Image (cartoon, rainbow, N blue to C red; front, side, top):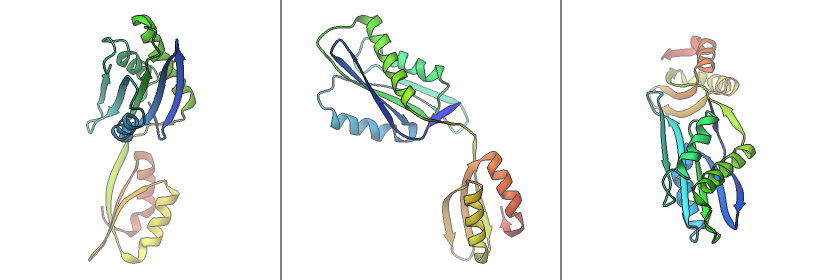
Length: 190
């Protein structure tokens, strides 16, 4: 399974209708959709499809035809995401109507082609299951932990400095295991 880290866009024109496809990480989907609605007030449709993993590692999918005939836009867009095995990824297609009706087959092709075009432009990351951990260390070991976090590509989500020093960290399971093995001598509690 793959996902996108950065927003990509590409445009397809079919019989004067414009299909502007935006591929975005699922985390930024809602904000991106709101911005696009403001930036494109004259657009006729904002077709969407997304797939993400929930907290139980189940794939959740959603689509919206946004006024297009049922099954002609959101479903083909979602099917392209499924075919590419994308997760934690959303696509938004902004459509400007060009005056010529495309018919159901034409709409299915246009939306599928628009999503495929933006996929060709995007770069993908391989999905790895991530793990979140909290560790407690001595204040004097902060530089060592910061260095090792960088070396093992561990994201530091939070640092607490009260009576003790606590790090809340996140990384893929393999990197986290290697990191914890390397720093185990300075960890007070896990």
